[in-house]
Amino acid sequence: MLPKVQIVKPLFGEPTLTASRNADAVWSRGTIDALYQKGPTGWLANLYGGVQSNDDFAAILIPVKEMPLPDLATVMWSYYMTQEQTAGVNMVIWVHDPEDFDKRAEITQVMGHADLGKAAGRNAHELDHTATQFFFYGENVSGNTTCDTAGKDYTLAQFMADALFSTWTIYRISFEYGWVGAGTFLDVWVQDIRINSIPILLKPDSGGSGRIGRRHYTQSGAGDLTGTLAPKTPFRILSLLAHSSAVPAAGEVITLTLDAGQDTLFNVLLFSSDMQAANVDSLFTSFEFMGMFGADDEVDLFQTNGGEDNWGATITYQTVFAGGV
Image (tube, rainbow, N blue to C red; front, side, top):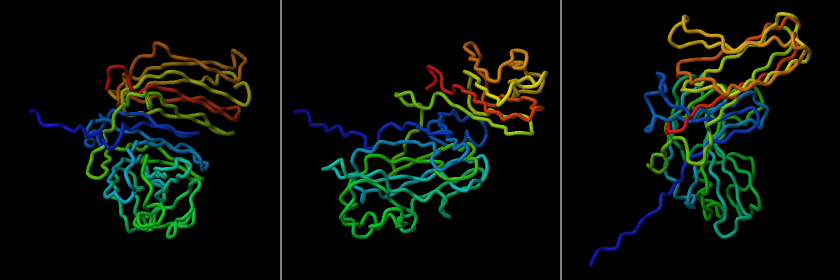
């Protein structure tokens, strides 16, 4: 008689990416130094916070199959930051009553907590159950005796021992970047995540999230409109959208130029438009046949703003290609 085999379903589901408002989140192939050395799959989650106005954020969402909150023993994650910021990549634990989905809450790690890495370059964090660095907000929360005030900081150990939260289960864990009210959050690449000693494999997901990226560039008054798109992963440009508060002056051409990683001899003008000649204050152009650029290539946006107009421009690009997973 053959022995019975029990198939155990994975505790953690496939990670996906999301972003809101000025922020962005895309999958990135780690081929550039400092991004190549870490991550089990070679894929990284590129989170971009953008200009911060409280509700701008990018996030990795990891489904969790109803783990009791007290069972969350260890969490580790690492990320590479473009520059020092006021907040790092923080963890959010999403919990609910397994018997009543009207009752739920998110238990959020303080974004700017002193223990959370915020320096330029590599950062890594190990969950500390004893640090006072988690707060909650939720719906239909009552009966919580220890962590009883929404928005107040507690330790995770207190949440795990709370009369209410200790009975709830985790349905999602996210790692987020943003949610502050000032500054511009530049690119960060999340490289490793491990929960309860289980590595979470970061890679382009079956649902298609994180394939399309956007970067926004602005200029108000005096000064040229400038911007650099540097995904640090193979990419191609999909479109350019630009708007000015007035028709630009004569000769103030808007351009996109390839800043090639190989050498300046390979720099190429990709796009040029004289909006004054067309007597328009806005443009949209798509690049259906724009070729793929390498991870070390960048694209520069430029427009001489002699008229001191107010500008807004968006470059949309693609970072993950069919068959590239």
